[in-house]
Length: 436
Ligand code: XLS
Ligand code: NI
Ligand code: NI
Image (cartoon, rainbow, N blue to C red):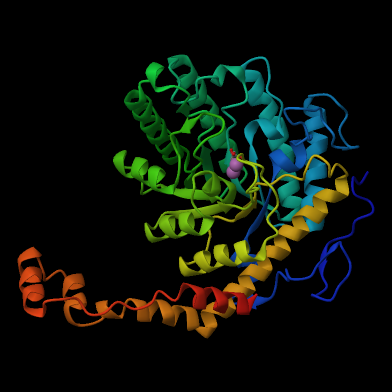
């Protein structure tokens, strides 16, 4: 029985459509900068928020109405839910999805039982992937919900917990490979600390590095060649997460010699929590050659936690798409909606409204970003701003031929620097607004 009988396949109807169950901007076949929107954006639906989110918050119980749920944590219920998930994704027209092991299948009393449950549901996921053509963007392991992970997983003070986490990731990698997953994500979970007085930070970082190498080794052993992604986040649940932002993650990857297999999965709300903009995090990861994928959501500037809202702000999606286009696109990563409907939006149909809005916001952002790039006005302003590096002393410095002594000689002779130019911030902001 269909879970969403009142919803047909969501179609592109153009900007004038008043149909709330249609795309106004996302036309998957429309070509932008030589590539279809579908290939640029690579939209992905997350299993945890969309099919496991129940609307609880620290002050209240579940609110979501999900008629297909039978209220048990059985494998049967999980299998039925998987079928519903694919009905949803197929109607939405999202080409990808992502999950944690424990989202899709119930945790058993033992590791063996958990693995068995996961296999049973994975078989259905495979069947549904084949039926619909929807693909797995990435898999990951939930190593933060169960109380055993109270002190973290690979950075736990308890060696048994490290071993358990290793076994769990081993299995999650096998399942991700079996389902053709194109990436594998590590979000830090509880890898971090609450108090440095009781924490051996160096030892914990070394364990984290060791763990990642074990993951790479095992991936090689089973022939999983997807990209590994680390997802930076500065706080929540621990006060100080080890993967706090793009720069910290990249330093970790370099220090432990992991950059050949790892890239970053940048999430909007995490960037905000780190005191950065999403644009900053994307540009930083991008110019380091380590931009792998994005978790598309947004926070609330009045709330200091990870509210994981659906992105609807066109200015934000324009900034994101400018960065993705600049750095050569997001593939083999994707635009993964790590976002949840609000607790008050408890009807199943709200899941469609939320995703349609996010996809349209990104499609618009893509078109606006492409227009900005095609006009080249903004690019020219930036180029002019750095004109002093194109010739003369600037070009010489960049070529590596100068040193402190030659530069002193240059400046002693010249006496004072050439006049600075205006930064033109307001002009450039006005220009951007002109495209929106
Ligand atoms: C939590 C993270 C999480 C990861 C997957 O804040 O965003 O959802 O994306 O473990
Ligand atoms: Ni998050
Ligand atoms: Ni995320």
